[in-house]
Length: 124
Image (spheres, rainbow, N blue to C red):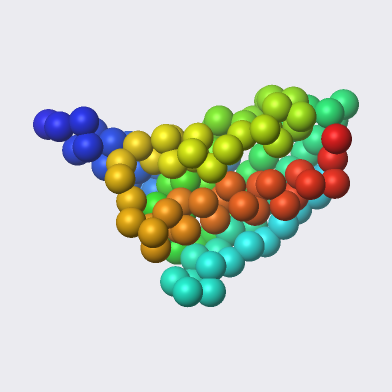
């Protein structure tokens, strides 16, 4: 098995059994984002306390890349200070995916990133 094969297996695992899936009842903020070109949608619920992202959950529909990216990103940011999360660059999310993506698939992978950054914009 090649490294790409292993990474594809990881993507499929996150797609089939997403981490942090669902909604937070006592959320601090939430956001819904969609990619109108392909129809992918994501809804994030966030719980922020004392400047830290205590919990993050998502629900969504779409391709394996968009949903796996959301799952991977929630694992990556959960528990971190909001100030640190806001410095994350899109390349980090693409690195979590770990395989080369064309421009259309990059948009799928970055849907979660864009939603998260919009949700966190009002927080310092």
